[in-house]
Image (tube, rainbow, N blue to C red; front, side, top):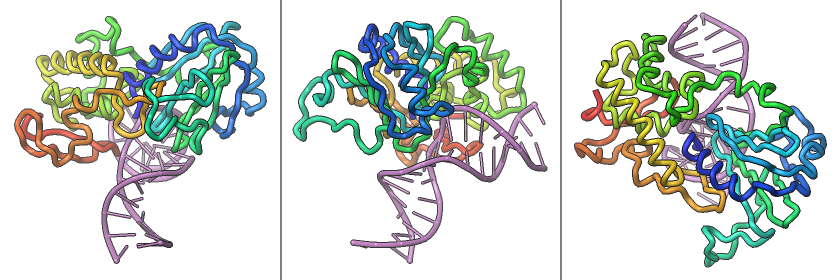
Length: 288
DNA sequence: CGTCGCTCCTGGATGC
DNA sequence: TGCATCCAGGAGCGAC
């Protein structure tokens, strides 16, 4: 599940790889991906344009073109962006694989950008939740209208977190942290991990979180997101880096995906429940 | 207000 | 081997 660290990893890699490239051809296999535009209009808008920068806001990847228009990509659950340096010659992590190259496009490829130098960017998405939109300006993208603070900037302070908890004192802490209009980019994995590190149960009521816990939680969110970006993100299921490699954060996961396994702190079995419809992992001994 | 349930979607796991 | 059923969940939406 791509969240902030995964999208930020892709942003860094693609900024390097795509900057200055000119789009020679656009191929759309799944027209719904580029809604509300048709594949033809979408392709015409991008054709011949040069890429200037690659940015990120929340879990949204923002590719800026030379004419000040944008290509916005949301990976949702199973989206992947794989860059192929020379057409037909992708090798994972720069090393030829025993079985040969990853075959691209494959049955999950929804869209591809082919560049004038022979390289290509593939958007794969098994579950088809993800989308790719062309926008004339960022103001016309509804998704961006309601995203909150970037948790890795200095503007996300301990005081800000206190303010959010105070604004919604009756909400459970987990859904509050998942609310993109408050903190932008946290998802199921990192919320569970941050709450474990702060020793707070996911169902705790925001108004009853102490000053000390608030401080721990703020620190945990920053530390975990930073570390995961350093490691290239969490490849739990489908997420891959832009060269097809896995991210390196899985060994650092303390609770997510570890139901029934011993807690790394106290050895008690990690529990799994459902909180507001989301699979939720925690240690009932360490978290109060 | 906040929460709940439904929708989109499909491979993988589980059950019989 | 095959078929049915459930599960995973980001975000938008309507209902209560």
